[in-house]
Length: 400
Image: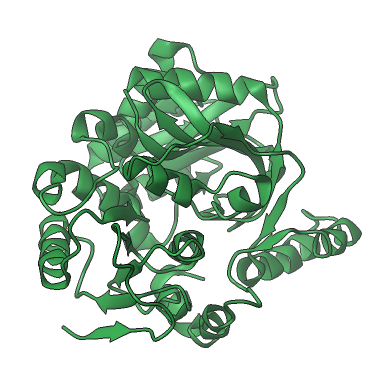
């Protein structure tokens, strides 16, 4: 295994650093948040990634795979021992990493600080069947969902089209198909997609869900650093545009908004599962009845988390401060702050304009008034340059 150390920053002689697992633009945001405050940062990835090129990355290490929980944990322990990373804080950037850290929390805690909660908490996020059952018990609206075990069971969806075919546990499905969900408009399409899904996941993990109409302007999320039943830091956003347009795997244009109802719903959920740490709770506003319906809970940083530092809530650093027992003031992000990821937003915009889903002038205006770009930064330009050169690789790997 080879190490690469940047010349820009030396390890602080005092205090721990952070280990960012996954070095795409989300990981880069964590690196910058911490590095700007003098925290040493190690980036670990199994892909070619842009965060290693940041001036704030102290050193990085490539590992063979981060998909298998045991291999991931073993790699972390080996690097932790070799590099002397006692007390460093772990930051997972993908759901399967959250699951691995959660399941092996005790072992990892012998070396690292592990902000990820244990499995008793994470199981409610990992499996959507648990998520929606809990939402139902707590009186939080969610889309109508069916759980067919066979093709014969698909008849229960009659009269409810269009619907989405989705996985209860998204990891296996997304890596195999590069899709988050599939749309079915007819019973014949639904049968075909059910058979297709069976090639990737077992029948009991297939969900059929009422497809809530509306694009990114109906997508919302509540983001928080949550601890002991309270939100220490939070903001709420409208995820105005996403890529792909219908079933967005990632947001491309986001704006902070004020929406107390989503704070209330989210805090009810997070208290019920005794959650600690950074979290994003996703909703969609149903234009048919005005209800905000719960879609997903992510127990980690999320793609657009760098909107926080512009809005007055620097999420990765606040978590770090809490982990090393520094005082953390409670804070709330201000409304009207806008974040964009140009690499995915430009094709989304062009496609949306061409098929009439996005109004051209409004789109061009939005390109002038954003506050934070996901990757490009004048004070740390190399990751932005590298992302463009890695574009073909990223497209093959992830579908963008």
